[in-house]
Structure formats: structure tokens, C-alpha cells
Length: 166
Image 1 (cartoon, rainbow, N blue to C red):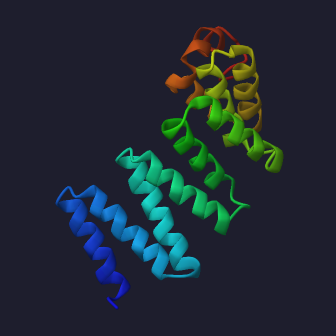
Image 2: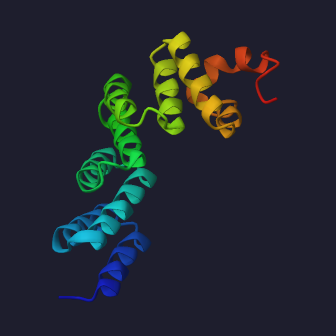
């Protein structure tokens, strides 16, 4: 068996050559060959590369497997929802993230993503409510909301609100 560093170098080599499918397949093989923390590290790397290269099915598979290993990590649920959004549709992603909201009711990132999904589904009142909840929990979501194109329909209302970004 190759050392872990050589295996990672092989993945990097495929990426350098633009062989994205081969890099992702090698990572998947590494995930299956290793247990515990190392497996989670390989899954996280595959998730990141899949997102970067818009390989949504691969990202979804990696996120689902990561969620099995760490169901208590809200960011894994968010990544899985993002993959679902691109691989399936926004409604399916929103449905998935509502499950996460039940498990993590105080997570501002989940609230913000739900706001994004609702805006994309033309449910602007619900979208605004979620975006405002996220911003009330963590102020940095106010700035993000004014840059995120998923909530662009809310920009005039948010910019006209004197309390927004105060």
C-alpha cells in the first residue's frame, strides 16, 4: 500500500493534469481504504474539490457520507443541501435543510441558507424572515445578505431599512 502522502500526491498530480474525474475517483478509493479521522479528511477534501469543479453528484455523495460520520456537524448538512440544490433542485435542498434546522435551531448559517432557498423559490416573505433571523444571531450575515445574489430580490428592502447594517 502506498503511503498516505504518496496517495495525496497522486490526487494532486491528477489535478495538475486537469484529470478531475481521476482525482475524485482516487479520493473515493482512499476514503474506502481508510477508517476514522483520515477517512473523514479524504471525504472533506473530495467534497471541497467536487464543489470547486461543480461535480454535484460527487459532492452530494461525499457530504452524505460525512454526515453519517458526523451528524452533529451542521456544516455537513449545509454542504449536502448545497449539493442537492445543484444536483436535484432548490426545493429538495430547502426540504433537506429544514430537517437540519430542527436539529440545529440556533445555527445562523442554516437560517441564512434557508433564506436563500426561499428567495430562489420566490417565497420572499419567508426568505426575508430567515435572513433577518440569521442576521439577528450573527451580524456578519447582514453584509453577506447584501452581496449574495440568491437574496438579490431582498436588496432594495434591506438597503431601505435604517436598522440594517447599523
